[in-house]
Image (cartoon, rainbow, N blue to C red):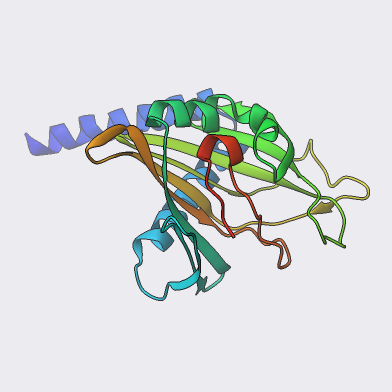
Length: 221
């Protein structure tokens, strides 16, 4: 009967949640949830087409757009085509995340503090010193979430608190709202990737000049 099926379903979902609860601590489940919330918020911002204004445009046609989002502040949207297949870019951004400082001029160092399951990581990033930055060194603690659905890959993150990485002496702990990168193969050119990047980092007015230098070979003004 339908009632019996419902009981079985309920029992199965209960078993699933019990299993998840035993696999992860409450704190880990909280980080997983934070990562998923960051992804939902970031994709919600990207999917809302209203209110974007042009910040700058490159000679090659790449545009940087911005808008004000309630409770988040000013966000920036960058769309570029990268001369790398998606899997290669994914590997660089996710699997080799700690090597980001080698090619991203805005990141001095990035360390994975904790991995939770296959989709969630907690990271600590030390921002590279910016020209004209009078405030001093900044760092971030972020929860990052990765999801692949079909040919699309989404990497999202936002600021979090991690007890084992308290604020460092002489370093300003910067906050950032939901950020994400959406990657998918360029239609008709699978050896290239279309990258849509949402940035909402509160750097007190300092926007990173060059983003992923060698890998993306594109610049944001």
